[in-house]
Image (cartoon, rainbow, N blue to C red; front, side, top):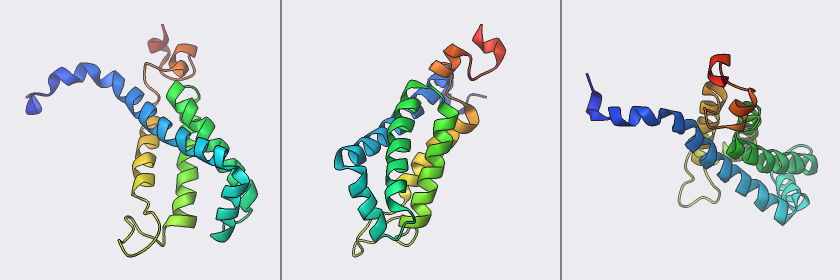
Length: 151
């Protein structure tokens, strides 16, 4: 039975990981670039105000993970590792910074909720569990995927 007559899209399933990688990778790379341009030390001062432990070190780690991890996802290189590190990054951000704000920040409360973080984590988990897909440097180099797919 053809559900909702969407079977023509089944042939495009191999593009799904590419689309997810490009979208979540771009968002993270831009966030990392923003922190780099603003100065990781300035971001560290913000983290210190929030009570984050080792704020300067964490600012540099977060900037690096977001910028480099996002670029790696776009390229499809070391995709699962990048997805894992970015998942950890955003999980820590939710727990240390956004949990008190809530899923969506109330209109009368400053701050940003963690709805975007959860959506990005969902994309990272797709890459982590399903892999980067056939259109990736990982697959070209034989770093990911079944051996039969690498021929």
